[in-house]
Length: 382
Image (cartoon, rainbow, N blue to C red; front, side, top):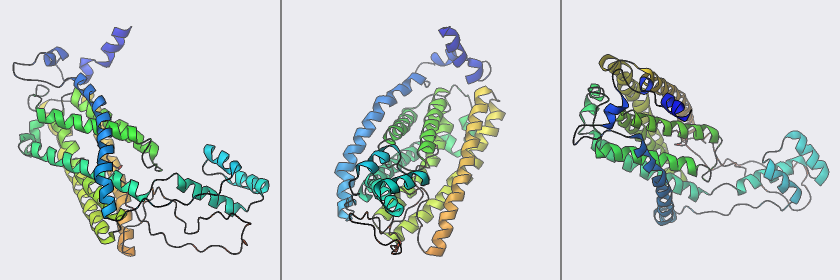
């Protein structure tokens, strides 16, 4: 039974082109090494190392930089202690209208006061600007380092300048140390992102990003095990390029350098458009879809890979539409507007009065929040 399932999962007719077997890849010529899927297991302990490296980086590098830029932790406003509201908050952070009415009668509080209590209580659990700065600085550093490493490797690779080289003699293409290092580093990083997502800044698209990280990990593993490393390195490099400017814009935003933030967001928007709506579809996807068909012909895994890449391109178009909306708002308002996925609920009067309710007619005047955000780089859509 187990052998039948294994044979079905690793079917050569699915994973490999015609007249190629796993045995052909297991026995490479002397001095040549082909990718082995079990090599990717090293990324599991390495992802733990990446998490530890991140903690050290944030403590020893990012936090001192935050202090230099005068980005303080800040004192979070504390909600008035209330056992009834706290008990409900632990199960439901945003009570509905019916629950608000019940609490109002039970506590003899105005519904508006209860809403303010829950708003303040939610903000208590949210990270400070300094925490977000440290997180973005870590991502910025990784994307910058890995992109420089990828470019230095790909610059001397013939398939960067002639994508048809990705498919000549496929799948019998040797694995270079640079390719292996690049793949393992990317996979370990995205494994660490998936794990740290449960402790990092919570955002509205938590489930979407979790699915995205899983899909990224599967794509990296799939392309490695199927020896599509040449096309895979191009895909990862193209996606890392724009993420550098996104994280740079966020860093400038947290440091309150608004002009620099706006400039970086413009650069990010341009780089996103060029890399993901021009280079990716007309250079990489074209090669995987048409040049590979011409040189090696289609097979079952080939259809799966192209389907995933086309879905990814659809996501690029959706994300660029959202980026364009932010850019248009920035043109009319003079600065990058607040991220739709903002993890901060801003209200200048988020106080819960310890005494009796104020007169309902004395509605506090809301100030314009000084917090602005750019669309988060969880758009790593490898």
